[in-house]
Image 1 (cartoon, rainbow, N blue to C red):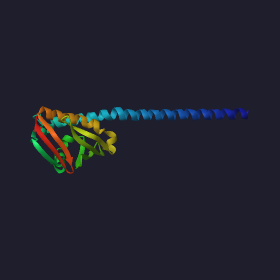
Image 2 (cartoon, helix red, strand yellow):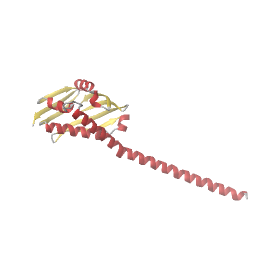
Image 3 (cartoon, rainbow, N blue to C red):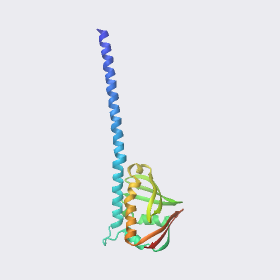
Image 4 (cartoon, rainbow, N blue to C red):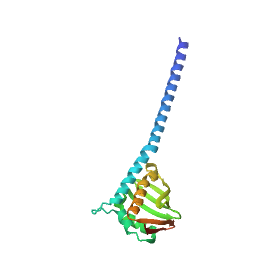
Length: 195
């Protein structure tokens, strides 16, 4: 009889091992599916939603007359070449933190050919890096990326799309056109004409 029980126990253990391996494999696939859903569906959707809210906040700006920060800023731009220092940008951002929500803090550095922004939002830190250019008369972001923990939550490309669209629509609506746009260390240089 003892010979009979030993093979049965080995078969039971082997079956448990195969069943356990099956459950582990299933859990891994569930985890992969969850990560893929987050990366390709939830993260881009969340980023677009935050970008659309930011574009709306900049457009309306909470102003009682309906004139928001971005339309007012675009209308105030003089024609010709305009040089804006990173210190002026950072001072403006600090004075208008209410318009940046959910961004809690942002510091811009203008580097050769692009900009870097240290950002704190949703309690997470990140560094955004991107270039800017003109394409068919429209301002576009080049190779935007967001590093750090905040970059795992937000896709910078999806977040910037509504803001980029809003800026270009405002320029068109106000009959303004940017004919030259470049970034040099510490300075943003923009040439504006009336269309």
